[in-house]
Length: 95
Image (tube, rainbow, N blue to C red; front, side, top):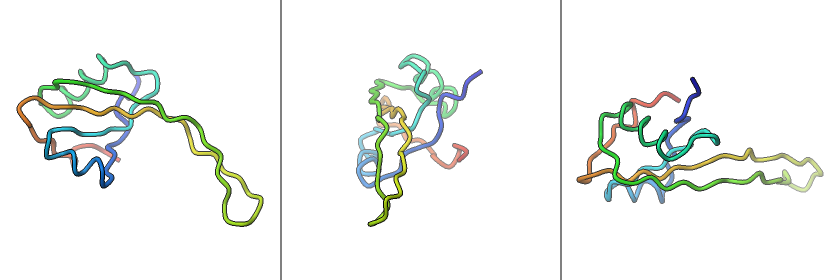
C-alpha cells in the first residue's frame, strides 16, 4: 500500500486558512482526490467536504554565485476543506 499523505504543509498562508477549516498536505503524486479524502477521514476522524489538488513542477535553482545547481523535487499539494469548520490536530501526523 502506498503512503498517500506525506506531511502537513505549515506556512503562513496555510496557517491563516486553518480558521476557515482548510488544511494543506503534501501528498503522493499518484493519489487521486477520492484516495486523499478517504485517507484524511480515516487518519483524523473528520468529515471532508472538498479536496483541491495542485501539482508542483521540478525547478532548478542556483546556489549563491557559484555554478552549483540543485533541483527542487516535483510534488502534489492537496487543500482539504472540512465540514462544519472542524479542527485537525496536526501533531498526530508523523514527519
